[in-house]
Image 1 (cartoon, rainbow, N blue to C red):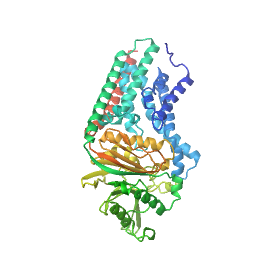
Image 2 (image 1 turned 60 degrees about the vertical axis):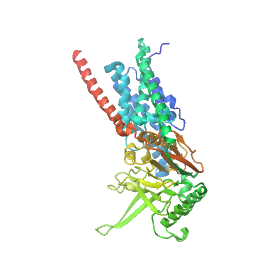
Image 3 (image 1 turned 30 degrees about the horizontal axis):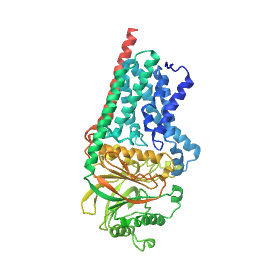
Image 4 (image 1 turned 90 degrees about the vertical axis):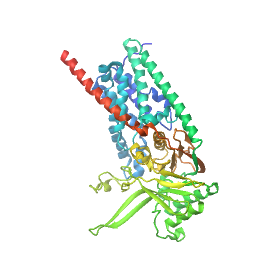
Length: 530
């Protein structure tokens, strides 16, 4: 069957938007991960055989529309977080998508240019360009396409070697090879059988490696130290929670904890924002039985004989040398030991821009008056390794990436020297949207990359356990009441990613730069000949 080249602008636009829109369905909650292996082919068909300028525009359109689809939850979240109205919320989504769509514009705008100067080798270069672009993504809501394969353990083990961006490369490579076959059919040329064979060989090898690694890690986990962990979650909308009294909120977590005490948990975790006053405060409150929050929480942990970890705010006050009073706020995690004592504290080191602070607001305080709603949290300075013991008295350590720190490899690198990751978050801000699913998906990649089990406790879901080989256990539904105790197997894997595989996106960046320089040199040579 002959496939005609695109000769209609409307058809090109539709194809670009189709590929961009697929980004929403290959990710959760739809989870059509298999579609990702050829979802970019319609756009590649539309790019043929266009120039850089026209393809840059089509790639930008695909990226912009894809970002609008994936991050549509921004509209709802902005209204919860701030005082901005609906039209301004849509404007923020449009601006956000305009910025992040540029990465796709660069990837697809150069694809046909690379084919012109490198022939079939473009199928290896264009994926490297996109990995380079993905690696440039700032900390504000990163989205790594390779993580969409997190539900396929045999495929996803590659993340332990190259990180999730290695899977991004594979996905784009398969799309480009498929498109090369399409181009050759339009050109009346022989099919690239060697490329097809290479794809089959590489994918088969990756699946074989993934299967063997999964089996090897599973065998190690079968002999690992095990702790009994409480998984607690509420069905409370953010609107209802903001009207709730701070003491009632605390009591809601206490009552859920008391409901599982007879199951003898080793560790109980309350999510981010589960306590509105300073957990370490020694000021007595009548509603706490004339006890301080510190004493109250120490009693809960000591009487229950478990370690308690909770997310709470910290406020530090003082007076400067100039006599002026100051106040610093932190988004913190506190531990209380099963012996009934206050343990360590961790302050979130990467606050969420526009959620937990307004960028440049220290320099321009008037910004706080324009965008009301975001907090004024400071950055923590020290990564913390918490120590705990199981029922047999054996020690283990854990770190607590708070909220979206759990999806940032740079943040996780500072917290990786432990036996367990505990990601606490409050995703109720995002409502019943795709965001909590996407947020959870990205944490799964961190467990495999760093070779550590990850416990995720979200205020309203999604809560789960991800093992070092990517298996997802005890996954909860969004906005559901949960109070259970489940085992977690603690075993640390020294992954190739940790030993140097994190360099993969930088190698892709170097390859992309080399291709750009060589392509430009060849272009000049052709111009001189003409």
